[in-house]
Image (cartoon, rainbow, N blue to C red):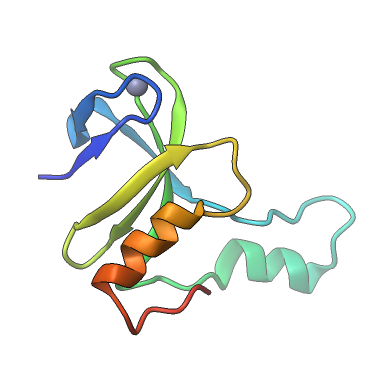
Length: 106
Ligand SMILES: [Zn+2]
């Protein structure tokens, strides 16, 4: 079972209390972008097996969006943090590197 701590209300929420929101820190391309940029954004994103940054919503709690870093293969959670960030915070990167020394940030 996946447990994520909501960084806003501090509740350790089960997956059933949350709604997934896809990949975090994603640069979106829409009107005004080239066809290649839009195709890359829509269809050619990597499907990571390992460390992944994701958006989650505490749907049956405070209702707020937050971000999480976890391993998609083992479900190990490295931490959760505010959705108001454009990059993963240093303490999250440190937690990942402590457990995955060979990991490099994409
Ligand atoms: Zn919450």
